[in-house]
Image 1 (cartoon, rainbow, N blue to C red):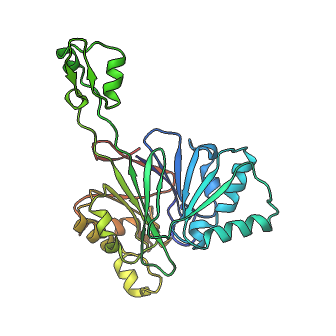
Image 2: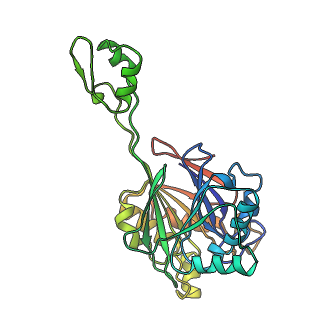
Image 3: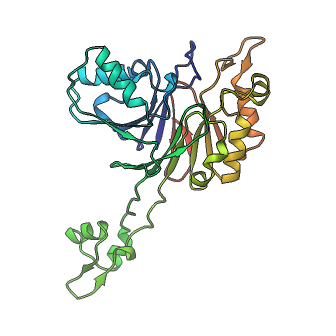
Length: 322
């Protein structure tokens, strides 16, 4: 599973960061999923391998502008580029009203594709795609906000050729039936079960991508099954104590403690206040302050998201930057 960050800033863009948007794809697939769509997201897509014609689903975490103001422009551009397939937007209440009013005010009355909204703030929300089962999980923020869990569908293990040869299963259609999970009968009457000649099925990977949230521990139940957590870390603990909790954002320490308690293997932090710089000048705060804070309480892999950077969650469960 590949994650590509288009925007990693909190609230407003800076010279090096745009506001929130994240691409999720099934490894090298050109089909992709967009989580949040802050202003300028479609500009960040220029020069990217992912096109609007291959966009499968948009998931919006909440109604704050830095997470959804880019939707009307991106949708209009998709129509101008001739997209034909319906576009699914999973989002809480308020997002559909905003998008449809924005399009109407801009005199966008006809598009080349159908726009479908699915409420993700319902308790039974569950959406199936060709790649993933998507579920939503409530967070703690100033408005209703959600995390999305993407769990890939189980895949069948590969056939073991040595076992097939030992059992004298002739190459051809019988191999195909076994790969599909069907038992076969050989000409000599022997019954071969697929599990006898197949490698164990790989464990499905699960990624949780959160919106704004001041209580990471609220995700504990789903995190106990999660390989990778993407979560905001807007302020360091000292800054959070200084500015107060009214903005309802997390610190790296909060995220790290929640991930450690649930046994999450990897964490990618994002949605940083613009006070934290990747290349700080004298007197400026560094993004490394946030990294150090989470690593002090969390034993797993930590990555700090950056615009136009990607990470791959490998089949063996490792996380690598690509």
